Every structure is written in C-alpha cells, then in structure tokens.
Amino acid sequence: MIINWHRNVTGDQRGAAAVELTLLVPALLLVLGLLVAGGRLWFARTTVNEAAQTAARAASLARSATAAAAAGQDAGSQSLGTAGLRCSSTSISISTAAFAVPVGTPSTVTSTILCLVDFSDVFLPGWPGSIQLAGHGSAALDTYRSRVGGFMISEDLSSANSGGG
Image (cartoon, rainbow, N blue to C red; front, top):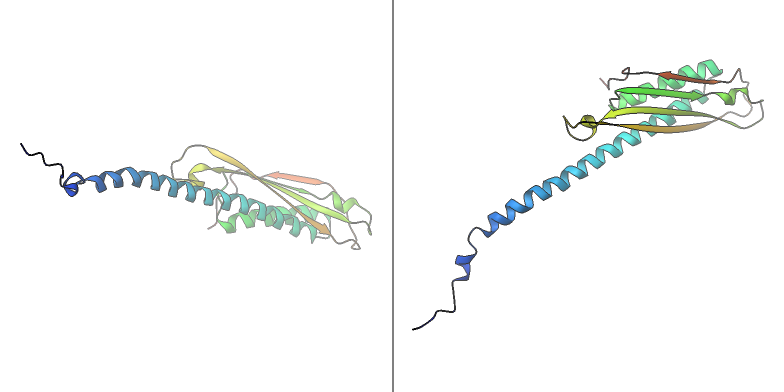
C-alpha cells in the first residue's frame, strides 16, 4: 500500500482568506471608530478652551467690569456656536476682579466655560450619556488703562447654545 504524504496544500487553504477577513474587519472598524471618536472628543475640548480664551480676551478689551462681563459672555457663546459645538447646557463665568485693581498694577481677566456635551454629538448618533467639558482662559488687562469696578459675573445659558447655524 502506497501512502501519499504529499497532499495538495492549496486545497487545504480554501476559505481561509474569507475567515481571516471576517475576523479582522470588525476589529479594524472598531479601531477606526475609536480613532474618530477620540478626534471628535479632542475637537470638543479644544473648542471649549478656545471659546474660554476668546471670552477672556474680549472681556479684557472692555472699559468697565459690566461691559467686560457682557462682552466676554457674548464672545464665548459666539465662539462655541461658530465652531458648531452643541452644548446641552452652557455656563460662562467671567471674573472681572482685575478691574478693581489700581491702575499701574498688572492684572488678569479670567473666564471659565462649562459645556455639557452629549456623547451622541461627539461619538456616534444615538450613543447614550454626556460629558462635561471645562475651558479656562485668561487675558492681561492693560496696566495703564483706567478701570471701572470689578466683580465676577456668571450666567447659566442652559440650552441657549444649540449649535452653529
């Protein structure tokens, strides 16, 4: 009896590529999805920080604490809307205590923006949950410019920022 030790190697590999593809495609799609989600989350965090910096800069250019608070809140809201970030609730705080500092003393106007972003806007449509993003900004107040007043104004703009459009 003769035993054939040399089998047809190509005949044993039938369907192997399909099995490999079936196993690899879901893993590759998951990795791609995580990369996209990470990029969108990075964009949202960067947008909130940029809006806070814009708000602080706008507030530092005003002539009084009241005008600074209004200008900062307006600039922060516009910056979030322009970037297209939809916050389910937004809180913009502008610290104008720098306006109470005597002329000739360096001082800084600060801002904080809190934005509650739904995961469905950041990751995938229909994804449950949300994340609160915080951005902080500061801008120097002109040392030798006259100043009027100084206090902190915080306004809760819940659902006021419904996105750019």
